[in-house]
Amino acid sequence: MALLVDQYELTMLQAYWREGMTEQAVFSLFSRRLPDKRNFLVACGLDDALRYLERVRFDTEAIEYLSELPEFSDEFLAWLGELRFTGDVFAVAEGTPIFDNEPLLEVVAPLPEAQLAESFIMNQVHFQTVIASKAVRIVNAAQGRKVVDFGLRRMHGADAALKAARAFHIAGVDATSNVLAGRIYGVPIAGTMAHSYIQAHDDEAEAFRAFSDLYPETILLVDTYDTLRGIDKLVDLAAELGEDFRIRGVRLDSGDLGELAKQSRKRLDAAGLAEVSIFASGGLDEFEIAELIRDGAPIDGFGVGTGMGVSADAPALDVAYKLTEYAGKGRLKLSSGKKTLPGRKQVFRIEENGKAIRDMIARKDEDIPGRPLLHPVMRRGRRLNSGGEDLNVARSRLQDELARLPDDHLGVDAPETRYTVEVSDALEEHRRDVVATLRRKRAASVST
Image (cartoon, rainbow, N blue to C red; front, side, top):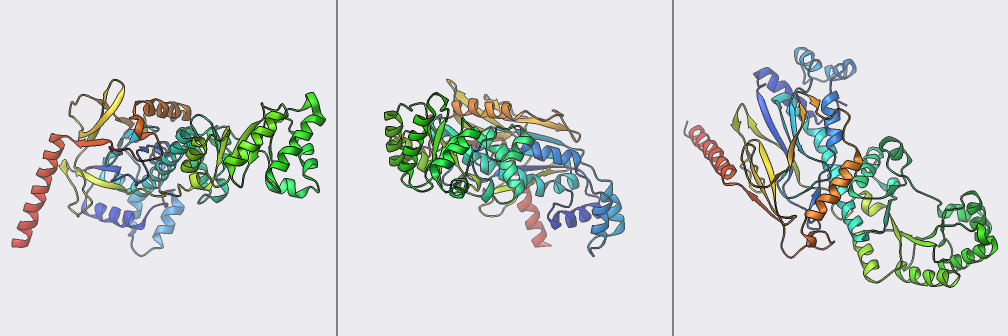
């Protein structure tokens, strides 16, 4: 895993090593701005980042590979082989809503160690935050109806499919079709049949009969040929089985889902099958789900695949991992449009009557009325919670945090007034001081 790194991290490490630049550094991971269709982000991916920091090391095979490259000296590689992460990490807990420019985590460690962590931490925290932030919108749109992750087949690789299922669970998704994710993370798994099962039989009714004989409480896919005729065949099967009929639901996967759900509900109810639920899937996202519910579609649950699995409308965040302090001095960029805040920081969530009204990004040692969001999670290279946090704790945390957000931030549309994130006077003053120092140095350099 140590080689899962951008090469410039290693070339910088060799330069730091050669120059003896090993004093303490602070790196901050944050998203500069929210995507247009996001009212907040959900912090996720911390567990994988901490596991990496505990275990990262360049073994013999990694060093041998690097020795074949012309950039690295034998002396540097010998030093690299002994490198371990010995620093501290302060982070927002997984399942916490966050906003523009708020640090998801800060790494405090000797400069080479903190620099090396950049690629992997960004990869994991960025992706899982993206995907959890999409999933929570779908869960909110469903308004308490069941949501199942169907995205495995179209996600961008195996690691993404696993980590997404984990993030989805934190976001409130009820189950996943991904069996390996169930094994690794303990999240509930769900799934019954595909159209191919129906197609493989000469007769749709016979397929229903055979499958329900093996799985009596299954959900049957009824739209392979004609949805409403499929419903009629289910009604016939119920009459045939009598008291032995235990099928829990039907799945609609194509066509006008809202109208088909209404017609299906009428036929099921008329046949005395009110207990048979209707589950919908087929290219859904939060906007379509919200519209179906607004139109009164009698749908009890949703299977959501590609749109959630790749966060199709906002697949990436403007995430950065930036040096904010080195050797006790604040550091930042002056680049246009890429403002950074120097030093270690704290984020305070200010609430009134149980509702968040604004956030304040402050210096780490400020005492500001509000709830601090960044907490120590690693000391001297070891996690403070050695076993990692139970996913259900993060899942419950998110539900509690959502209840504290302004109600108009929980819908699929942007609120009229965006959530306020302020910078404290002390942090702004520190930023101005660092900027002034940098400009003086630049002026002195030009004059000489």
